[in-house]
Image (cartoon, rainbow, N blue to C red):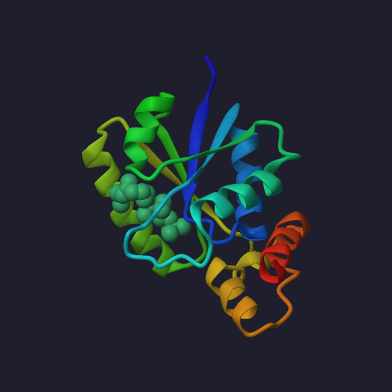
Length: 160
Ligand code: PNS
């Protein structure tokens, strides 16, 4: 039986922290769907199409990762893909509280859904999409925080 999971997030943009955790998930699962989703509470810097493009570029060399996207509910996508496990990354207790709430909601929507939380590595504690967006806005260097392909996509977008 193929073991699959869904690594869900906004990925606005996808960071080296996300990639590290996706690689860890890929060691545990045969297929890891990287799902680019929308949180209606957030105003995104990048369109869904751009976020998908960046996620595809960043995972191109990870052979069991596959990028998917929907405007709808994560649990509906899980039903469609026949996946029962959600994998999320947490850096600290703030992340944990948010993820715990989402895990409860998802379990209510899809009772077979289970969420696994992976702990971000020490050196990724300060890597977040929020920090990257802030550095982009201030024109500061964020090249240590995102994969090189993602950097190129962002820079191309900024000069077009
Ligand atoms: O990276 P984020 O912003 O913490 O990811 C949150 C996200 C986008 C995964 C979450 O908001 C989500 O699952 N959105 C899809 C809509 C949905 O299913 N909402 C109910 C679950 S709380």
